Amino acid sequence: MSGFLADTTKYVNKALKLTDLSDGLANKIITCNSTYTVRFGVRLRGEIFTFEGWRSVHSEHMEPTKGGIRFDLDTHAEEVEALAALMSYKCAIINVPYGGSKGGLKIDPTQWKRAELEKITRRFAQELIKRDLISPSMNVPAPDIGTSSREMAWIADEYRKMHPADINGAACVTGKPPSKNGLVGREEATGRGVQYIVREFFKNPELLKLVKLDDNLSTKTFILQGLGNVGYNLSKFLTEDDDLKLIGISEFNGGIFNEDGINVEHAKKYFSKHKTFEGYPKATFIKDSSLLLKRQCDILIPAARENVITEKNAEDISTKLIVEAANGPVSYKGNQVLNRKKIFVIPDILANAGGVAVSYFEWVKNIRHIRFGRLEKRRNQLQINNLIEAIEVMTGKSMPKKYKTNFMDGIEEIDLIRSGLDDMMIDGFQCVKKEFLETEKIPDFRTAAFKVAIDKIALSYDFIGL
Image: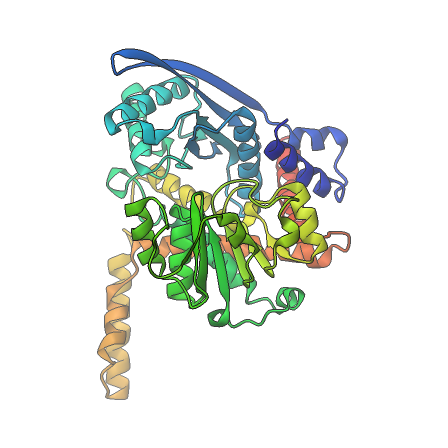
């Protein structure tokens, strides 16, 4: 068993000790239901290349099962199983009615041209679709490391070709482009969800007391590890909406630090152009980016890969709060060190659940065949207009233009998506917080989160008579 999968199982076992579940049911919750390995050939560049991929289904207590597909040369079956398990727990915590699943293709997408990558993706999709491992009613993928809305559009199109009579076919995958039955706001969803979790944490004095921080977000600093889709979006939201100061960015080939603050837009453009932060003019370049994880800050946000904080470097971590925007960034032994140092960790199965929340909204939209807000928008605008007119008549004054414009614009689909995401993340957070504060034997927030998830999954199994 690999380190990531073994660590995930250890976290679950730690929480299981605080429940009264039977050994049989506990083992059922831990065990991955199935992992399918597919190997397929694709003719490219005048020869046949064979690729290997996986799709794991961790739990079918709810269906369909849900989880992204990553294209990564380092991925393997046990990593995919660990990620599938985390998906089960994420969905349970924020009350998304899915089981957990995950997929991986062993490939470096940067080594292939766009047309070649499309051919590979479509062949991989065919292998999964014909085994019902991609289906709107059974198994619904989404983007992950190395994939994006582009790959999801190819997969959805392949499903349509193989199942032309399926009226709900567009719901076979989420994270599609908005112009291809996708949802505005899906790309930002995981980062936005992390933002909502950070905001909610700072609204809870009982937790702030534990980390010795006040509730003024504008005085807080944070360091980011990983400037991908999630890291970029959450940094943008935290700095622009909440006035937090980004003082460090760590990437795989170096990082930057500036205690006066870093403009994430400017840094992102530079990194996208040069593929490195070396020579970046507005911050100090640090060749060994792992050193940035040890710098003093209020919040450390790992947003890239698993196992970046282990027993080897956890002792040197000096932040007060870690928010896991990536999957499994802290190893089990690393987490033990952080607990001993009383560094508060908001775990991945809560903090980065925003992606699956908005994926759920996209899936629902595809099943309903109508966008959110379509039926009520004009009616709401008319009611608001009548209310403004009534207020102006009663007061004898005109409402300031900026307020009137905001009211008259009405609610857009993106507003509803963000509202729903905020609600789901806050509900999940408060549920975990309640477990953490009220259950005496729970040692940390992560264990509380796993216990909440396990209790919900166990209840689902109980209702189906297992």
